[in-house]
Image 1 (spheres, one colour):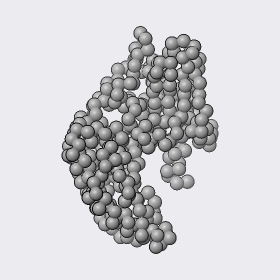
Image 2 (cartoon, one colour; image 1 turned 180 degrees about the vertical axis):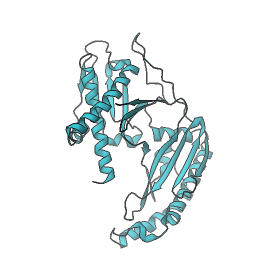
Image 3 (cartoon, one colour; image 1 turned 120 degrees about the vertical axis):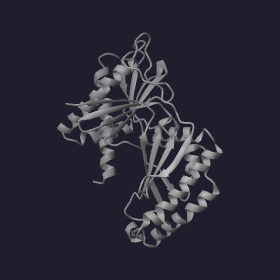
Length: 323
């Protein structure tokens, strides 16, 4: 099975395990309902595709995360009255394209309150965005369009790839191009770098913040990263909606609000690399953009693997080790 497909199945199975642990823990203390939508059925199918031992491990890891979240989110377990139902749901993937990275939601409509969880199985990438001859990353990611100059620089490269793909009836492989890191990746990354700096220069103070909102998500959320024998919980509290008290019940740990950057400090190539740019922003944010071809066959687009290299000190992170 392809690595991406395996990653997807693992991720979906973990989403289901988290939702089912929330249900197990909370149904005895508060009114809970589960929205059994299409994403829920998909996640359940992925979960039951594993043997009992593996399912048990998923549930064990999820239970550690859920216990911790109950301590820091009192509203999960506490309703105003029996009409205050906690609804659990799994979100459709397409939400991520509009800047919402949450996979599992817990909602109390009566309290006008919700929290979301981004479930990750052994990986920390924040986004997998593409570049091509007609993708306006400026508009799509940051709300400001790319210049004609940017498209003039990348279009000939992507058009040539499209031509190679067409003439070879989609069979030609990247390796036939020789050193394509130098001939394809570098000019695309150079154009991307120049454009990012131009956008920041023309919209001072806005681009850095919008970039983080696009990459990290425009909603507050907890990221739960499942490892082999541990689980890590990070709190992306950008807008101050996480960790709220319920009446006089306070959370057992305090989560600071995360500071968004207001300046793009520099964009440089990672040492000895022709594939990765490091973008440094104010407030301690740093992101790596690694460009790659998603398939062994030539395609007229390239994919970014975008990772958070460093976050502000105020990013709440807790690791729970599982015996």
